[in-house]
Length: 586
Image (cartoon, rainbow, N blue to C red):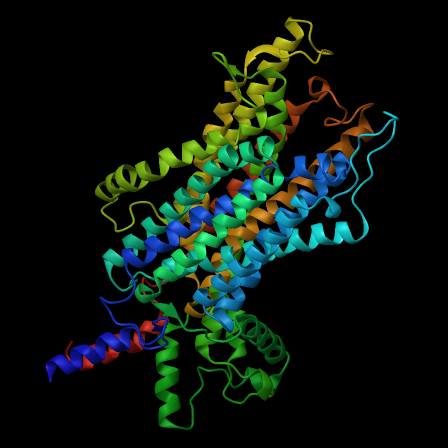
């Protein structure tokens, strides 16, 4: 009898999770490190497939598709921003209608289709624009247009759609493999997010070295082919883990829930009948009294205006909601300021990935007899992340747990805060390096020269040290925070906010450069960031401006973080399970 109760309890604990055969997931058989390891391997291949093209796409568009430099920049920015924003769509669909398992397979197939189209276009001469070679050297290269241009953009945006779906589902799918009701499960989940970022870096390292070399030396048809093979291999590897996965069941549209609660709160605020019938009033039935008693015990005191969404005498039956839904919306609204605070950090990352490369291009890029292409500078933050991620998990966190005597050692918000602070340091270091670079140019009378300055480009790697560290702390911290704090029904969507923050940071960076040039051009003869010679830019002033803006953003973040109250360690959805286990004596 006890064994039967124990089995019942195990099944109940997994009542919201199923196996890939749509049967209840069993504790000990499904989930855990073994299942999550398949996700980590897949992420290496997926990020390799994406970044091998994205990191060098400007060159392909300019040299082979003959777009202008400004058009190339816009196309790449829109492509990358769209891919990260579409993670929200992938997360929403995984939570609401499908599962993370299904969304990954659908998205990988879509990305594979897009890469096949791009590979075929790069390989087929009839799908490429005409060559620039002509008898008249003054002839302008003909830009790709018409059906050929349509093929290019169909391929690119199928890749963006697939990448968005994968980014929106794969991290959550891995995190779902761990039992959050145990201390060990929560620790393993935190380590998973840390190693997820490590695997992102592994894929990026291969992409910006081997992938870029293939594209530059063997041809873009081979470059796209490598990406196609990477995503193709990732699908069967993901399927190999099917028997070990536990899969969260979809729970319906979270967007609808949020809209209903907000609408109910607003409408009931202006309804005198509803205001006199809030949930704290006595209910007519015993069952309702018990339900309201439990609700009153769990209801939070924050964002009290939303409590008006719950009434016993609803004037608007269409918008009738319960306390549980109101509490879920409160959680979403509470984590939103944290999301907004991380956009500035990603704006810094975007600026450093553009201007830092241009800085390095004016410097001595030799290491001994080896000449390093400036475009390979992203290798530095990638290597830093690969070194720091294991060190963080195996050295820093155990030490912090001993010092703080807490389960986490460093909280999610502390980790994000460290990332924000390091981004401030990165911008300050970038400004100081730029001052030093321009001093060398002045001293050597090379301000108007295109010759490399007698200063090593390794100075630029200092800002990448802080940049890589900030990325590790913030991205892993954000994913862990959003997944842990979000309501059970919105976890994939909430985790996708990490990628949406990255996309909005890239968009904000473009807007910020335009604003700075407009304002400085109005009050000065020459804008700070204008012209073809970086030596005449006031890039150091722009970096100091970014440093100040990041500092202000950090102070605002501290205000929100200090007032934030973490939710319970286990989800509200597990309360029924705990009560059942307690009642059966398990």
